[in-house]
Amino acid sequence: MTKSESEPKPEPKPEPGDGPKSPPRPQSGDNRRGAVAGLIIAIVILGVGWWLARDLTAASKMQDCLMSGRSNCNVIEPAR
Image (cartoon, rainbow, N blue to C red; front, side, top):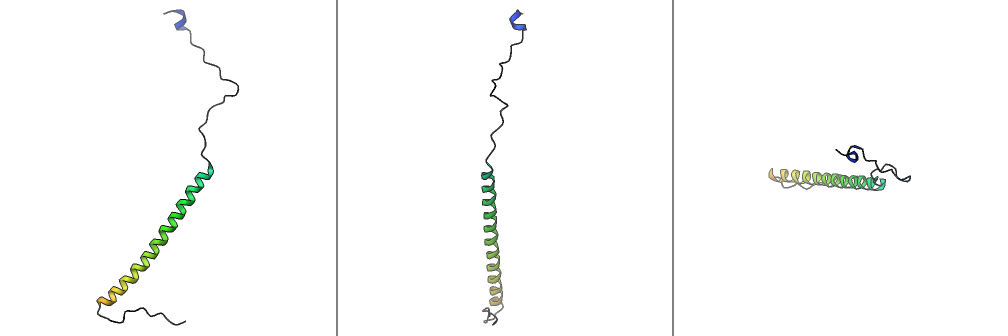
């Protein structure tokens, strides 16, 4: 072994303006946009599901009435 191999190599000194590098933080606006978009999509899906459930229930009741052989299956709205 030679003398130059046994001595540890000096580490380069950091410059005065260099600090520890931290990963860049995402902007907080992007996080809110995603949350708001998800909330809007969830509300739309719930609304479509509610409308579909009501429509299918009404169609099922009408079909049950017609299958029982009755001919007056129209829905009569009560007078207010």
